[in-house]
Length: 162
Image (cartoon, rainbow, N blue to C red; front, side, top):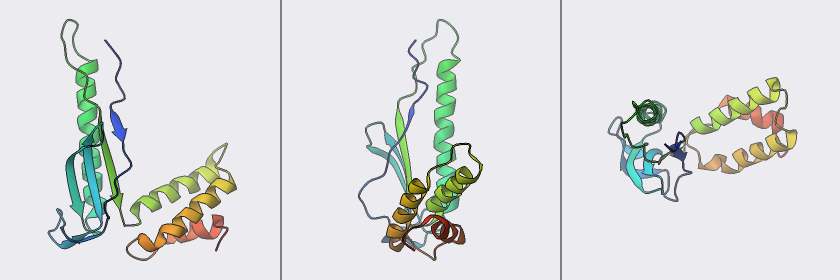
């Protein structure tokens, strides 16, 4: 039996615009979306694509992440826990990605980096944090809504350019 316990591949999105004024949000039905959750085959071909508005994005992206990760977990357990003499195939490799023009992903990264910079024995270097701050600042114009306070605090502490 080959060990294929690592069957989820996180893929980094595609080139389609995140903001689509004509797309309909699957969460509330409003016209205009800013994010998508995509499940794909291992080669990146989409199997499911779900679009959401800014208000629905946090809830529905979390929903699909939990659903898809749990499917992989259950399939992996069925394969690993199969009784001797049975032949359950390992789960097929798959991918997923979550991308949006909202600040939610940036907030997650900033919180993680702030925690690491304060409490880790070997925190990220100031150069790394400054580079991340510069990248956030460069892409800020692509985000919908005002910059969250957590992000502003990160930029104030680690941004060399402002």
